[in-house]
Length: 268
Image (cartoon, rainbow, N blue to C red; front, side, top):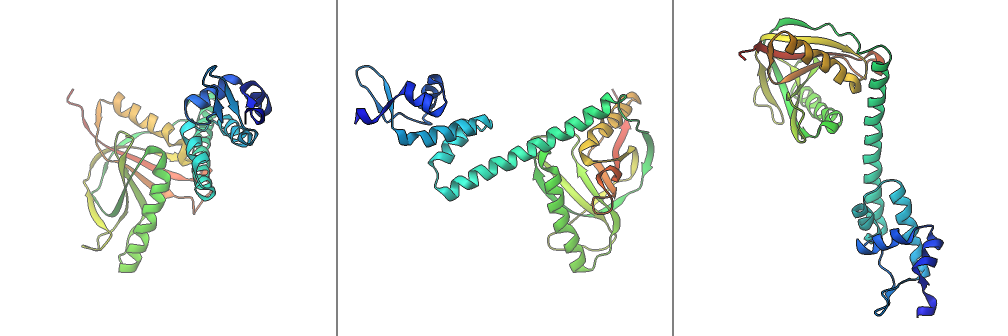
């Protein structure tokens, strides 16, 4: 049996890995040697283990966590494909966030933050038909689309007339798990299955307009919260976004979003 096995050094060279990596994979239970000599402690590997070792090295090169790699190697082919596709989707989401950060840095480097006019006005009371969801900050876009996909058909089925634009309601602090609300202004309807109704009180608000991709909304929020602080005002929840021009109507660069934050005079 031992004549058919490879020493850890030969196996490392075969798989283009280091001896240190193979020892680490053994210690973490990711790739155990085929045999360990009881007297010397030397590790020996079977040639057919090279496929798993090369797969581990490839997935580690892609920064997949060792725990994920272990699950993938232990899974049946169909389940393994599911695990790897889930990691692919997470990677695509991270790349998208990084691209948005790059674009914001480019705007900042091109001459400082873009100018936003922040005004303090009075907002009227609004009655909204709403649906809600819980998500992470990174998942807001997807959950908003899912909520809108529930809200608009429900309004259509019941014949409830609503007044554009769509509204998004968000907490002041973006927490790891938070509730978001998607609403449409209407004076009709009550007790409709799948719908709630919420009244946004009127009162003083600070607001600004953002033109461009949703990924660059943090620039507008920076200007809005800075102006609120400078004017000695106190922010109130929920933050409101009105989507005046959405993705179905214009390219990303021409999207128009009204950002509104209820305010009070600071008592501090």
